Amino acid sequence: MNYLPLVLLFLFIGCVQNPETSLPPPIVDGWMTEYADLGIAPIALSDDVDLYIYQDAHYVWISYTVPGDSFGALDLVVDTDDLSEPVNLHVSAQLGEWPANQPELAPKVATSPDWWNHKDWVSNVVWMNGMLRDTDPPEIQFKNGTGRELQLSKSRFGAGTWKLAFDIRMITNSEGESYNITYPEDGSQYEIEVY
Image: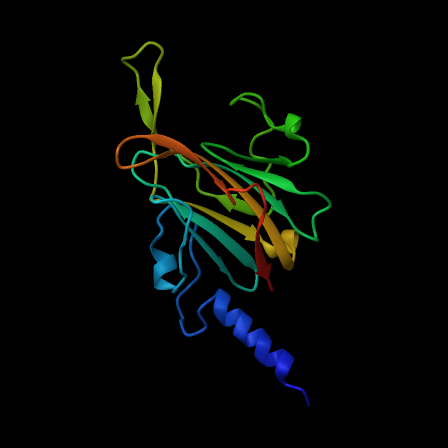
């Protein structure tokens, strides 16, 4: 019997998750401690932002650090063989999705009923942290965790090669300067193998 395919499968799985640990998978709570504990190596997107990718038999976690006073809003284009067309997953203070090739279907205003249409994926959002009522008009206050975490179901997005394109906005560096991150920078797609 040829055991080579089985050996290669175990080697691949070992590169994606740490089979040596009995630790549970990450929880989508905005705190990024689980990824280091699971032995996931970060991918540096900038001096301030690290990307982590983890998977188990059912889900893929795509997460990145959000420093200091950053919002770290995201538009993530996901293209897989199981999708009929690439989809844009949006994360800010609200969640939403639309076909990536039809940006006109994105909600136009914050009060649109088209928000919260996400299916088989979830993310922590920028948290509402009260309201300043002594301003005119009143101002919503926001707070963030240490990262943005998305959990995507393999039942919808499938196995095989996932092609990802990140547009992360409103990152604030240690000097207080705001910038955006496009990853990959050249406009191509970052590929991950999902088993």
